[in-house]
Each structure stands twice: as C-alpha cells, then as structure tokens.
Image: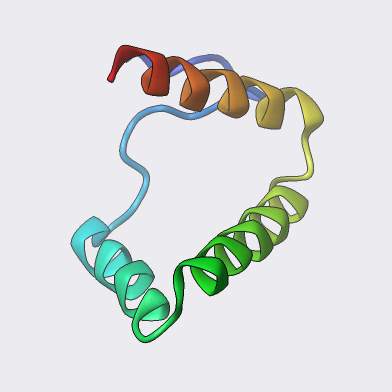
Length: 72
C-alpha cells in the first residue's frame, strides 16, 4: 500500500518497534474475559480516534479495516 498525501491515512510502517507494540497490546488483554476484551478494544479505539482527531482519516481507516475483513 502506498502512503497517501498529508492529512490522509498513513499506511506505511510508522512504529520504531512494532513487535513491542504488538506485545503490549496482547499483554493488555491478558486475563480479560471476551466481554472485557471487547470493552477494552472499544475504549482504546475511542482514545486513539480522539488522538488522531481527523474525521476524514478516521473514516478512511474504518473503510480500510472493513475492506481487509472482507478480503479475509
């Protein structure tokens, strides 16, 4: 996936240590029930969406995530 212009969703790797971030996400879910995991994910998504703060970027991310679900 190519990177898009400024103000649009960044699709290239932007994490210095992606494996560490992945492991932190997995660890954050440890010992949570399925219901708690869903609630945690919802809270995390809303916190990150607020941090991004750009509705167009968020809508693009939603569409991209949905697209990858349909491909799976």
